[in-house]
Picture 1 (tube, rainbow, N blue to C red):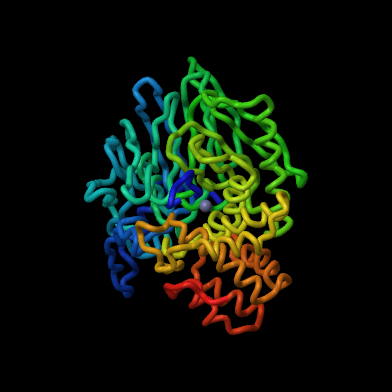
Picture 2 (spheres, rainbow, N blue to C red):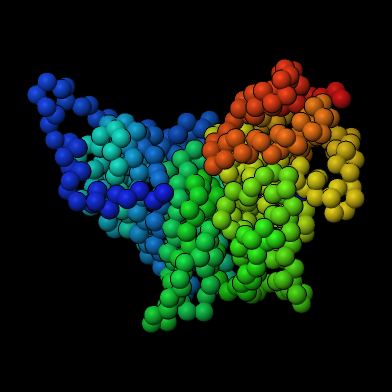
Length: 473
Ligand SMILES: [Zn+2]
């Protein structure tokens, strides 16, 4: 993410599971074996900043979101099907689902399940049978209503945000549950299919690859698939009037960009936006290694949130973002490696996203505007007034602060000075390769750099990441 003037800145083949066959999972075991004990999954995934987010006891492999949107009422009518595997013997489990949407029908493996909603976001589901550890199961939830955005006093607008001609869903950190039931934790990545029906004339964009578009009875259905693992916070949807441009990078990657029709554009801006995106992805691939997804692109939208977000494969740039320029594109596209393919387990480690994305801006300035990275670093180091925070544990309300972005990037430049260009650029390439599509922590990063360089860098990283106060150069 980057703000405007802000100081914050394999689909499981489990269709057979729908048959009653899985019920056998709960049939009495053979005489000698003890009866399995089933217990509830945890209601949170254990993030200290967002304790209610995510859940325990299962692992999602795929979300199939089917949603019809009515721009007249801003209501949706949706069914989300979740393909998961139990990681413990489950008597019941939670999904995250928040706001005023009303659930009509909910089934587990095709059988009606009882459910309750508790607190801000817990959807507590009790299937009519226990789910054995290791068994695949399918949850289908049908719901309707007008989704509500989240307006967090510290973190701003997120989730399903209504726009003049549609909606844009931006889900970092906790917005996804505003329009689909989800295990909303970064460490349960899954593939996605989003099938969205809107009145003919409107366009729908989402993560990943487009499928066929069909129109019946003045309603058009768009289908988008993300076939690489994606954290829910990086899922995205944009509905409205858009000019769509399709291109390809020099490396042959499809490049789909879109600009909201209500946005004043200069002649040719569609082409510039598309081609600049392609060029930056190509350039970043030369430093960070193979681009992790099957297409790229971006969406310039009139959404009014005041930030751009690194939604997977296709970032969203709000029109109100200060300047949608090469810097900003380098930031959000840099996130595709750092943040999207590699995603911190805990939100306290978000500098692993924002430090690298900000460093991508610094590299862009050097490459395309002849401003050396060291000069950008020296200015940031001299200008920074507040050294009181902890980069690798900024606190829940400060995950989008300058502390995370600027001092995160400064940490990387200080590391470059310490270990030399050759080792540093090895880190930039090998770190994303080593953890492709995975989850990472600051500890993982430190150990990775120490292994790669054969050096003890404990006190260096302690000074830059954990210890408040200005590190000595
Ligand atoms: Zn960012």
